[in-house]
Length: 291
Ligand SMILES: [Zn+2]
Image (cartoon, rainbow, N blue to C red; front, top):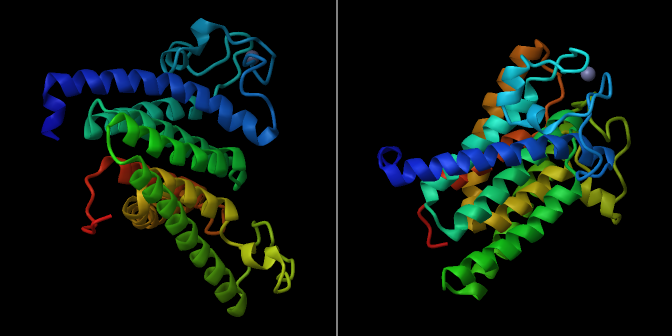
């Protein structure tokens, strides 16, 4: 953590944090609109209660929320604390990525990665579902980004693309096997998932595609998100991310149950995967393998 003391890192962290706040503000729009199939570009944001159009000065990340004391300027309706929270989380994630990686092309790619993960986590938190635009779009961004970073660094582009594709495969199959065997084992043990899609339906028959993707208890969106994580982090990074996600899932899951006081409150694995993946992008690598 000494890096924070040198002035160059402090400036880099500050710039990344400010940029993260602005991106976080946009992610709030993405989290709200993408699951509803709405455009993230237009129309401009309005208060859901009174329709008051939110002006530029009311849209300054974090600051506006504090100045307005979390209330709409038009009607005084409460503005959720989640808006400044998403902005702050994005700012902190960008700053941490910038400090741990330095002013290099990989930092830009990893900030895009963090933004995709925060969008996925927010949507999964609200809907227990992750849109393909984020997970599969992110998978493509991870492949292209890995190649572009290697090219800008003068490194081996083909090796980077291979690592990205293999990472996507490792992420996909790791989570797929967890979901697949968890679902079969749960059914065999007679467990039910009252809040989850797929509950109450009989398992699909063998040769169909549904048979392979039938996961009550864990969404197939998590599997696609793990593939995206692998495309950005490569095979070693995605394994580190999944291990960290399991720890994050335990902590977030217990916190969620304590807060809701309900052990059956639905909680997607997406936020845990996102947290684990951002941690893997920031923390030094600890898995000592050559890839
Ligand atoms: Zn209002």
